[in-house]
Image 1 (cartoon, rainbow, N blue to C red):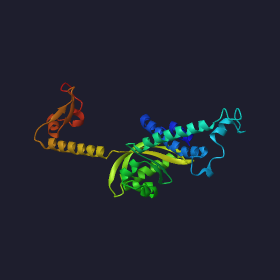
Image 2 (tube, rainbow, N blue to C red):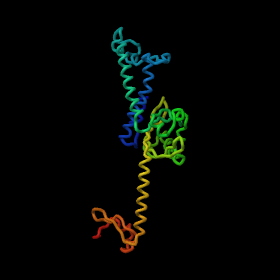
Image 3 (tube, one colour):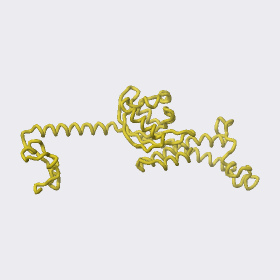
Length: 265
């Protein structure tokens, strides 16, 4: 799974390098977490030892005949080496788990229309419990007006088409509240089948600030247009960047022709 994941990431295009790096790090962490089950069973530390793989990594390293360089397995793993491997795996698992669980962005793996993996930030963002998120269709987490966009890009990505990895839409919380998020996603292999690894960043405050700025600019424009004065503005180089209707009428030229000109043009 790890090799397939890294292949998917290396071939992905359209996303910025920093975002893909973050996806790669967490993708490795997720694959590592799944691989821990295999290793624990191989080491005999899993409660379900009856399902331990028939061929261990040590067997693969020593060869198909299962023999090492000597009777004690020199060239393979001895009991001390196995304990060291187990300890290293445990320490790494803790680090990767912290990386995912303390991330500021919500993270999930979506497959077959459901959330197969998620971090605590996703539950916090959507106000869902673990039981609720496990059975909630992914499409129902999206605002009705944005579902067509998200579904279209998901289907086209599955077909192998080049679609944006990063875009914006609105999530819907458990109580029906809508808020803006920015998604960064990439196709991965999850349990041998295609899935989507997604990062969600809350940009609702940013969207509110942008809307407030647009409203303020509209009010300013309305005020300037309503004044019985000829008003215009220039940039640092003396070029006209704005003029109200009264000024344009006094000059006898529309704003489209005045914009970018200086007093000497």
